[in-house]
Image 1 (cartoon, helix red, strand yellow):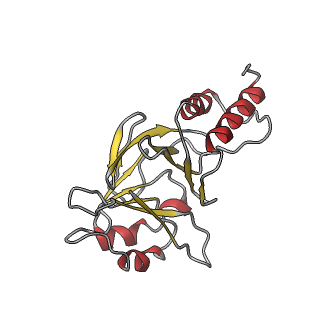
Image 2 (cartoon, helix red, strand yellow):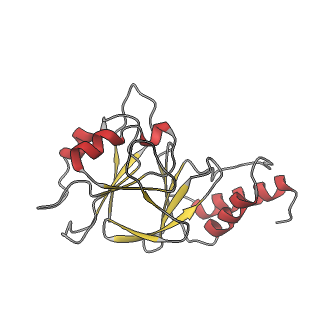
Length: 201
């Protein structure tokens, strides 16, 4: 699988958007976007990327959560490519296909697990591909460096689930791509959230 971090608008607050393509760009692959950002800045870049003969450049969009900087550019993407759009919760003015915790979805040439991580927002999700040891985290707070009491049991349960996954690459909503000590970072975050909640490690 090929991951392309699309360039962000230099003048508008937006998130990272990632284009996922299969290694061989076959007709069976599902060209996909993880988040779209808050304007149409990514469209020209996508049009200049080779995404496969006879294939729509974007066939599927996953919105990691319903905050403006992650979905506001969706109108341009839908108008240009008419993709299926998935999210954990409804987004006004769009036909959204619902995602559920624990289900799997095909992006590019890989299967991804949907993990509901309600820490940053109630509808936040992460996307995990075990074959690639890869996690798209949106804005889920996975780097907490000191005890924090702000998070509830649902977030702790999601962190425990993530801590059991083998994650070597983390594609974040704003910090770019991290590929060092990701598992250790998530375990440290879990420990600090547990300490903040008064629970033992």
